[in-house]
Amino acid sequence: MLDRRSIIAGGTASFLCAAGLRAQVLPPQGFATPSGTVPFAPDVFRERRRRVMEALKDGVAVVHGAGPVESGAAVAPPFVQDGDFAWLTGIVDEPGAVLVMAPAERTVREWLLLPSRDVESERWEVERLPLGTELERRTGFSRVARTGGLGSLVTTLAERSKTLHFLGPIVSASAPVPKALELYGKVMQRVPGVSLKDDSGLLPSLRIVKEARELELMRKAMAATARGHLAAMKQVRPGMTERQLKAILEDGFRAGGGEGLAYDSIVATGRNAASLHYTGGGGVIGEKDLILIDAAASVGGYACDVTRTFPASGRFTDEQRASYELVLAAQAAAVAKLKAGVYYEDLVEAAKDVFRKAGRVDDFTHGLGHLVGLDVHDAGDMSKPLPAGAVITVEPGLYVQSANYGIRIEDLYLITPTGSQRLSEGVPRTVEEVEAAMGR
Image (cartoon, rainbow, N blue to C red; front, side, top):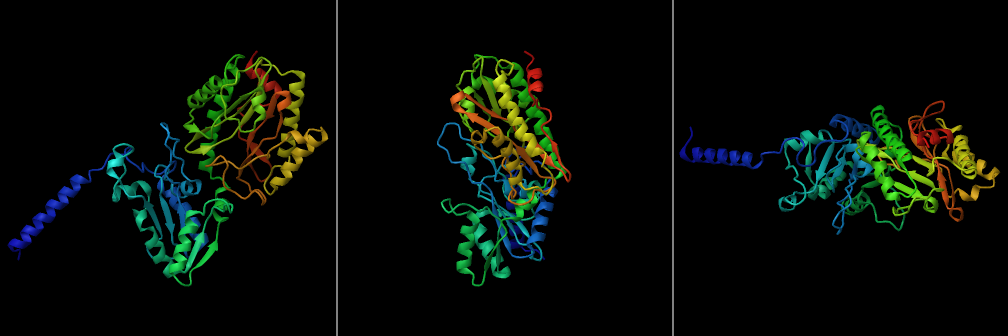
């Protein structure tokens, strides 16, 4: 039988529940972070985590997302999520997030930890979701908690499993200690018998082979990239600044469906093109200059990477043509060897042999290429044979400051069992294709 105290207590509980519901009125989809998983549905990332945990078998693994962007500038750089964390979770708009996986646990095997809310700062920056079912629905995690509990969670799991898995990254001795290793060291000091296992090669081995859905986004990024490069070739005029041409290029990316930049665009004219990662923009394009553009769009967070070099006048001089076609020949020599099972170093030697025979190898001053995917310099061990499904750039070049030019030709290739497919086919590459596109 209900007495007066029970009725009052029940009424109070009902009141608090109702007040709580009013306090927890949630923003509609598209508002507050995390906004959801990007660029795929939560089940895609859940399956990736399942594959990782299947490989680990037991123990505990912690993967930290990127931390907040620290900047005192009026315009802060955009937040970019850590590639491994983004690949495993799809959470790209929450700085300071942490993933914990414990494959041998009976019921809950994965946790997403997010920093605590600061409602006052959210009034200035961005609204964030409270803990609850909406957060779980958007992220695809059945257990979402705050990062303040990370130490106790990992300690408890390590006490049962006795193994801590390090998934990377490996960094140099002069770099800060990775957050996961720092955490593991503290746990091992407090839980006797816990061992540390190096599994830093696991995620690169999974990420290097692209899924069909990843390749679809990279092809869309490539189509947008092609539109931007074509716009730059068609609209360039002597007397423009590099910055003006860069605006035309990036407008083309957006018009072609690009959602962002794969990396900071390089637009370099004349002597500036001999600086490999030129960051200026005030150079004035001369009538006789070669222009080097290393730039690409991204779609769904996936990158591509293309470099083209073309004459401001629309026509290569005989000297420019000879050097350009030598670079193209070096690229062709490397691509001829490109197929599943090849070693990257063999591609490098094939390109260098072309330059050696021409007496120009000293003008080739950088690496031949890199893997591309969710990151423009993507995960994967290039000291091992390259697998089918990997995407790689081949980008030989010649750089001569004294002659006021740099030439680089960079294309994107999907490695297949018997060869490769050039993903950047839509961007003019040969002398004839470039001059025809420029239409001068």
